Every structure is written in C-alpha cells, then in structure tokens.
Length: 263
Image (cartoon, rainbow, N blue to C red; front, side, top):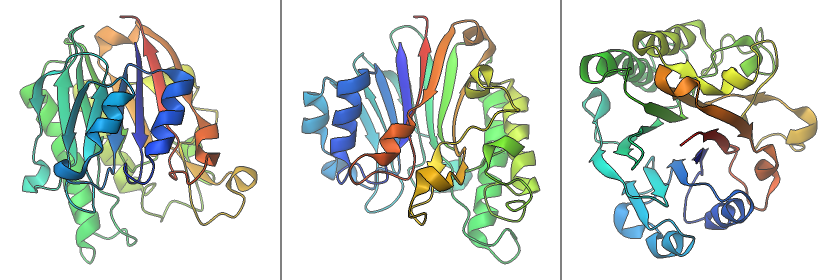
C-alpha cells in the first residue's frame, strides 16, 4: 500500500499536480492538507476520475481543509474539533486492511513565537498539547494507525537548513519541538520518515516560495510528517519525499511524502 501526505495549498488551483503525481506513482491513499475549499466546491468529480472513488473531505471556504482520497473503501469517518475550534484541521478513517489513518493540518502559528502576544502561536501550542493527551485517552497504540500531515514543526536539527538561525523562527523553536516530541512519545508513535533517513542526514519537505532558486538554495524544513504505531513499524517498506514535485508547474511549497507499507 502506498500512502501519501501532501499540503497541496489549494486543491482547485493544483489539481493538475495530483493528476501528475497519480500518473507517476499510483498511490492507494492521498491525504491532502490546506485544500482551501468548502465541501460543495471540492473537485470530487475530477478526483474520482483519477480512480479515487472513496474520497472524504472536511473543508471550509478559503482556509485550511483536509481530505483523504482513497482507492479503497473508507469506514469510521471522524473529525475532531481540536482546541474547540471548527477549523477543519483533522479527518480520520479506517481502511479495509484495518489501518486507521489520521490526517492533520496543525496551525502554522504566525510569525512571533510568543504565546502571550500572538494568539496564533498560542493556538498552535494548545493544539499540539491536545494531540499529546487525546490519543492515549481515546486510542490504543497496539492498533495499526498512521498519523500524517503538515504538522508545521520541524523537530530535529537536520530537519531545517540552519538549526542555529531558526531557533527563534516559528516551526523550529524549542517550545514547539518539545511539545511535538511530547505528542509523539505520549502515544509511542514511530517517525516513519526518520525510520529510513538517519537523524544525522538532512531531510526537508517544504521550501519557501520566497527563494528564487529554491533547489540551489535548499533552505528547507521538514514540516510534513508520517508517524505509525508500533505494529506497523516492521511493515514499513520504503519512504520518499518527492522533491521533484516542488518544481512542477504552479507548485505547492510542500513536496509530497510517500510511504509504502506491507498490506
């Protein structure tokens, strides 16, 4: 089974990217974030024409939004309102093989890493705190589960182009890293991307639009993540951040991350 997570940054504007990716890699499941389309405006007809007959969406006008595109039936659909906000940042479903998939779009957090003056940063920290407490209270990590999405935090030193220069930049501040690590450890999630790429090696999934030659500058961050519960660790076959997609026509600033799991 091939599963992809991708912050598409507007599904309607970048439908061509999904088509191109599907033609090249034929994934079974695509988890999208930042779809920026309310449910009635989602291009469901076009997505189904690509073979994703089982597509679930949770969107809102102009902002946020998540979707799970699947070639296989989806059951047990659920969307939790994190921090009590109806801002369409989570969607979960169970695949026929019993794997429960959770698709997340964690708040970016604004520009100022101070929760006392920045409500967006405060919201982000509370959101990740709730992720840490919700899963142990509601789920069992002995069950096969996958958590994917744009978590908007690059936790490791080699998840950013310059650890020292980004320590005070939202997405890599010590408090964000601490809280994301807490969320991972509280439920025993396995970092599937770092399962294949050692911590000592650089690994990015996002490159800013501001860089004229993003590939040459390579000032990236790993904001997109794939976590699995322990029962799936030994079933992991491969992982790839499809960096080339960042250079396709009218790209998202995020590249898709893909794992292959023994079904």
